[in-house]
Image (cartoon, rainbow, N blue to C red):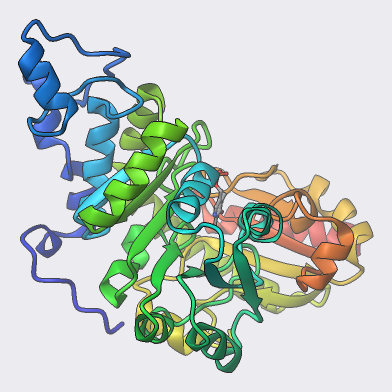
Length: 401
Ligand SMILES: *Cc1c(COP(=O)(O)O)cnc(C)c1O
């Protein structure tokens, strides 16, 4: 795959090394080998002038943990290294970061262009909350470049992209759409949750802000919620200001769990995407399956773009089961090595229909309008042995047949 890593000092190191060591060295007091969980809400100063200078941002230091916290800051530094970013800011969930980034840059009279395929919660922000604020929202057919580019060139303030999309696994050409956005001076935001920073670095394609639900692959164990945005310092400072005032800060215990999770990100994702490809290939040959969505399959309609902008294809596979929801209801309970749950990116394999996972916030009519079939099942492939996962699917299909 074509991407050259940027010639910064850190980017020269391998992914597995960066996930382990990134952002930690400067955050290890007491000769600790692990970043400590600093639970203090506030930080004390006897020198009122120093206190004032720190509060004004003129001196480094901490004032109050809604503003900044040492454990959270270590996580932010780790993400900077993984996304080749200048600055990062962490939030209490993926939706907190998405809404805060959008609300930081959009206000009455502004215009945002995005696509119909995106995480259901994100879609709700576009359909429900931004219009309420007087923001003009334009959602295009996801891979219709003529339409998207036309709408961008009409003039807009923000272009919001998610690739691969949840749960349809469509791929958007980041370089191409960023180029269109730059022609009208729009800010480009990309949700990189599905790809992970190991497979795709949107900032390298000119995207301004990359964000993640850290609840997913970054933390990797389904036991914590968080979100993080990365980009140029001047932009991230605006998002940080929004967090300081609106308050959806990440707590230090969660920051610690996410930091710990990231250390095994490279190992996990390597195993998960090898398993995902094996499962996608298995599903291709299953007569009860109508469609298989996985960007690593040469038959995927956006395979060429995926090869250009991704270093790996990720661990999410989705498929449409013939017979729709009644068949899904039969199939899923037969699986042994699978949680049926609304999460993804964990070490365990997780199955879920769009109706109860990514698009649980949408009505049946809304899902229809978005082209989300009721038979669509998302698999977040875990780190188990692929032979076991495939045998499990095989027995479940035999049962429903
Ligand atoms: C889960 C998810 C989100 C939302 O993140 P939360 O941590 O659940 O708030 C946003 N985007 C994508 C692609 C997701 O998968």
